[in-house]
Length: 180
Image 1: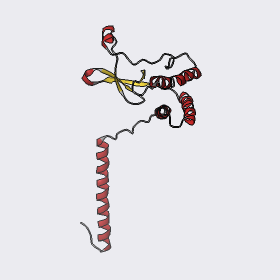
Image 2 (image 1 turned 90 degrees about the vertical axis):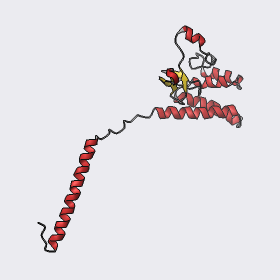
Image 3 (image 1 turned 180 degrees about the vertical axis):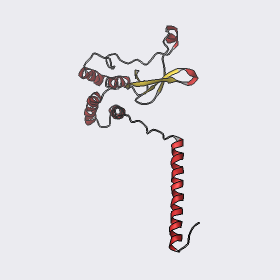
Image 4 (image 1 turned 60 degrees about the horizontal axis):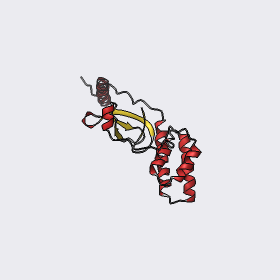
């Protein structure tokens, strides 16, 4: 299931699990934040608190072009929610690269801009998570059964004892003694 995370604003794969008290919750695949799963019945949905509003013209499902959205974002620069929604448009590395380029241009003009610095750090974090999530998964090595481990240990002990006997036999043969 893909969600827009309330904590980091990323559009990411989420895992549904049982939360405290048996309530269902989703865990963001990007940042690991847990969120309560919204109820599906109309009555329960009415009782639930509303999700924070994401400007429709900025979000991941926006039909507007990226340059138009960026122009509007420049006009609403102090709106943190608009920045989160703008970043939510990008769920792949090329998109994050474009967003990073946009914020880097702002930082070249205003190096101490806290909003651009925060957005740049967020883009780097999302790109790292996305790149790491695309690495191939490896299977853990199969556990060797306990009986095999014990059998190998027994063989090693027997070989050790045989080596000791052979060494003693060679030493005693060198002195002219015989072991009965």
